[in-house]
Length: 166
Image (cartoon, rainbow, N blue to C red; front, side):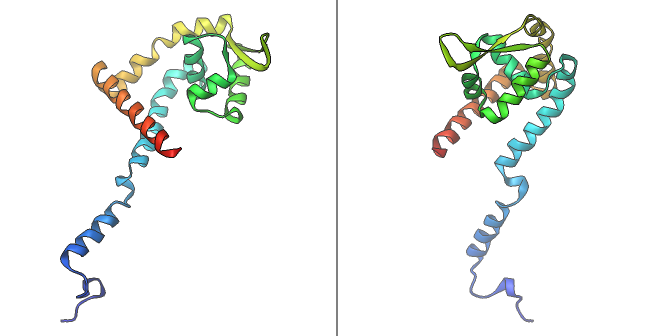
């Protein structure tokens, strides 16, 4: 019986196993980046019905979280905190302003800086948003401690990745 090309005598069993392992690492389900990406998509699916009653998209919700924590933030700081560039952030802020949730104005101390503040309606929306975190927690099926541990591990991973990218 003749040997097939894949069973050539030049490959030892160890090198064959090694090349098969390398191929396995290229499977989609083996990719950490895809696991993170597809999990982010799943999060967006869970957030949507929770945010629809608030009239917010997920990126808008993130901006509102920043402002609920600290009102009167420069646009540049919001971008830094959310890892968003101005090309993404500006239209998002314009939509929030058109919805009457925020106001953009020049910083009197530095006219070059654009500052974002909550409107009365934006501040009031915070109360309705209180239902979002418990909804996410329930969807995750994890206790508070496990959720915080997972968050901490993801933040540490992001810091390591940011460090290796520069």
